[in-house]
Amino acid sequence: MRVNRARGLQMLNDATSLSCDPTMLWTEERARTLLFSIPIGAIFSSGLIVRKEDMSTFEPYVEDGKIDFAALMATRVIKLGIVAERSYGELIDHTLQGVDEDALVLHYGNDATGSLLQMERLGRLQAFISFWPEARYQAMQQGIRPDELAFLPIRGNPAYQFVYISCSNSPKGKKALAQINREMRTLRESSLMGFYARWLDPEQRASYLADVKALFEKN
Image (cartoon, rainbow, N blue to C red; front, side, top):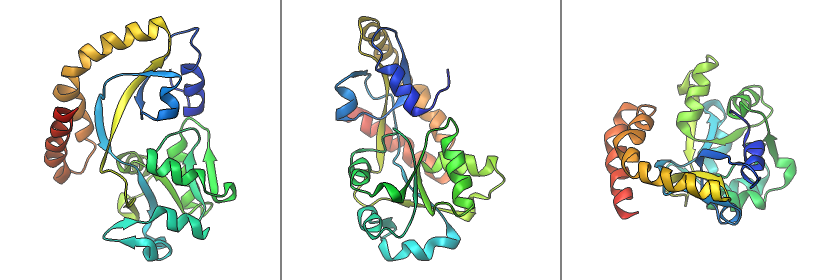
């Protein structure tokens, strides 16, 4: 079943039925009410997706290819698009908590990233947060050349984020995750990360797979 992030969290928090989400980031808040698997994958962290023609707005906050996200948002010079109820990781989530609501455009729809990309193209926002492979795919779906866009990593953010399967906090959820964990200890390296690597630029794939293997060995 495909639902938006807000609806998905609502279903997960209903302990009277079994629901699972295969692409969740772990947060302390979510872990209070939901169950999480072992890490099933590691993906490149989110960053800002901007139009290259608008880069002059962001350049004052960029150093060594990474943007000072907190400093940018403190100036209130842009409208930023985000997916409602999505976690972007601890650093980004913490910064967003202090951002004026008027500076944010929240999207609740099923095709949120695609819609935010359209809104950026129309000038209704100047940047949105996304994973680069996700934004690039949506751009190609809409006939936008990926080289019209720029991906700005956020300073202080880790290069990779672990992804988990999350299930309802119930006996059925615990049973499901016990089975999932057994399978994922093998599948995450033998299959899943290879599937993700196909979405990356060819020159990134080998180093990504080596990095992920090292991360899993530590975890």
